[in-house]
Amino acid sequence: MSRITQVGRVMVPVADQDAAIAFYTDKLGFSLAADVPFGDGERWVEVAPPGGGAALALVPPRGDYQPGRMTGIALESADPRADHEELAAKGVDVDAELMGGDGTVPLLFFFRDHDANHLMVVEAQ
Image 1 (cartoon, rainbow, N blue to C red):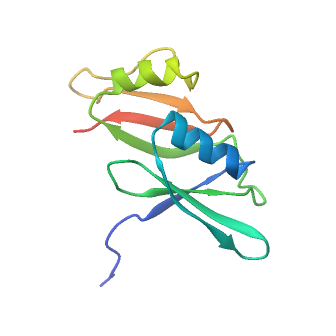
Image 2 (cartoon, rainbow, N blue to C red):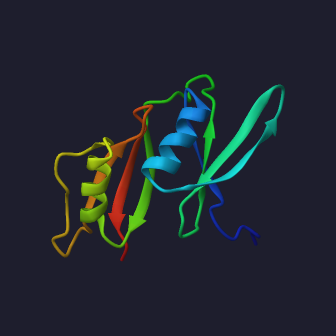
């Protein structure tokens, strides 16, 4: 039987770790959870949402793992509509309209970070 207990972090490829830290902390309100030397002259950088849960590891590009991708990351929110408005006001590239919210599919929208990585904000159920 596996001893895995939770998702700890998800890797997101970014072109510039400092710019990524600024985006995720300033625009999304995440905190910087780790910024330490790693490997041969590189850094291990993690940001985490204020409510806890899995962190995002902001990693340099490698091979086919390049910025500008659909990440498959869904961030939960108690109020996606308010988040959509706030992110748009902060200049974040958000979808023009929210989707779902019809009782079958939760309310959600996609946004793009500074590297055009796609993430989703979805209503917590």
